[in-house]
Image (tube, rainbow, N blue to C red):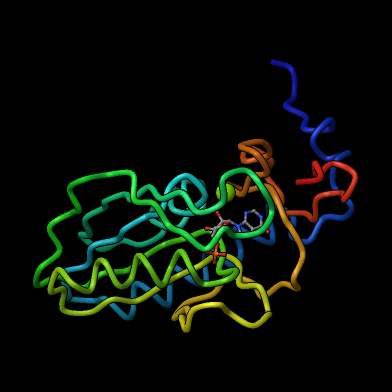
Length: 188
Ligand code: IMP
Ligand code: MG
């Protein structure tokens, strides 16, 4: 079989921030912390699609607890690189989370608008607890007051792609995470 290369997509990166091996090592640590925290508790993981798909797949397989998995799909970006401020939930029926410990998984905490809206919506369903785990957290002021309980990596305020994160639905399958070249971003 021919080896898989991602060279075309790699060329669109200004620089690589985290190689695949670095990401997986950090996910090992996150999984160990989360496993210890939810020992003996009824855990439901809510993965926010599409961005957290690859992160969730790698993280959850490292958590040896009898957890449940649900997915939510929201749209807040509409193709650009900055948030529009409005969050649209794409499903009508939310998972039944009453009486359960909820861990929300998302790819990145940026403005906080998305995670604040999701946390608010889920908290109204009477869960026992709601915590947030993100792979990346941008170090910048938030538009909504929301903090992550578990963070893979802190990054600067730059637009990144790869390992699930997209620009106009591209680059999600890049194994590393990198800063997208400015000349690859269409002017709005
Ligand atoms: P928010 O601004 O915190 O609401 O982030 C909303 C969503 O925007 C995230 O879940 C990501 O899907 C996307 N997003 C924010 N920053 C980036 C980035 O640097 N690269 C790719 N997607 C991003
Ligand atoms: Mg996105």
